[in-house]
Image (cartoon, rainbow, N blue to C red; front, side, top):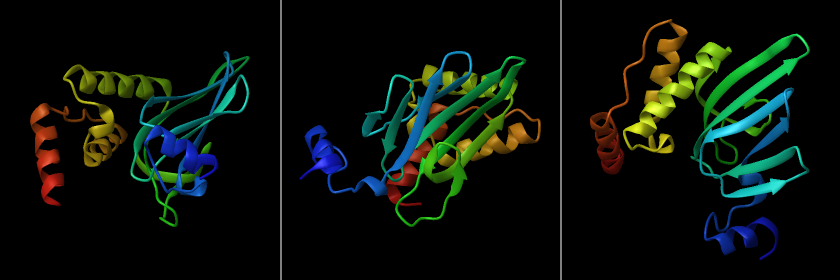
Length: 172
């Protein structure tokens, strides 16, 4: 084995997947200009390009949150948070800048006030002991729809999480 397959095998993850079978997310960090970061997610590989850029690789089905912020001399130009599900090879997907080939968008918010609200909702989920990676994808869709409508989303509770895990276990 060579390349990514060998590195993945050494790490004990994603054995047998080729490079193009992963969702790749390019992160950029140029202080006070462009800042991209992952709020949550489990990448299986990281490739450092230089001091300011790196690529994270997510296996099909992985859920992650990508935050993108851009500014110029006049202030913030872009604040966005996307919660995405990594897609498999050949699976249909939506295109997102810096994400190759794209992803299944579970949630998208624009504007710093909404991004900040989402970061608080993610913190609240973590505060009850749930990893946001494990949250029901339908919950993220619900939050997206409620925020888009200007309404308050339902809280994700341990009871909802247990119901999701049970439904997933039986294949519902």
